[in-house]
Image (cartoon, rainbow, N blue to C red):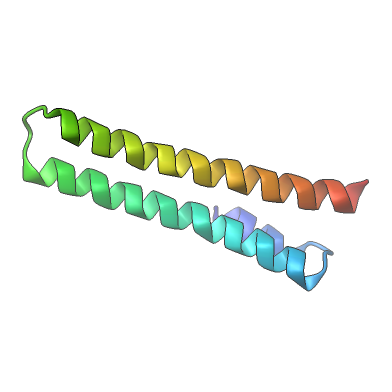
Length: 84
């Protein structure tokens, strides 16, 4: 992700697009941090298998997936608009 942050700063795009690329990258990092916090909390509470623990981890990974989809859409649209 740090590569994308650097890449977003050197692209020849307008300020708004650069801001969107930067925010999309930070959004994925934020989603990963929240998912790691959920996973660490669930693992800390107990090692026994519980359906709600599995659901919490699944929803955390779904949040990361949604963040990645948003990331790909924003980066794809900016690159497509500036390369074609």
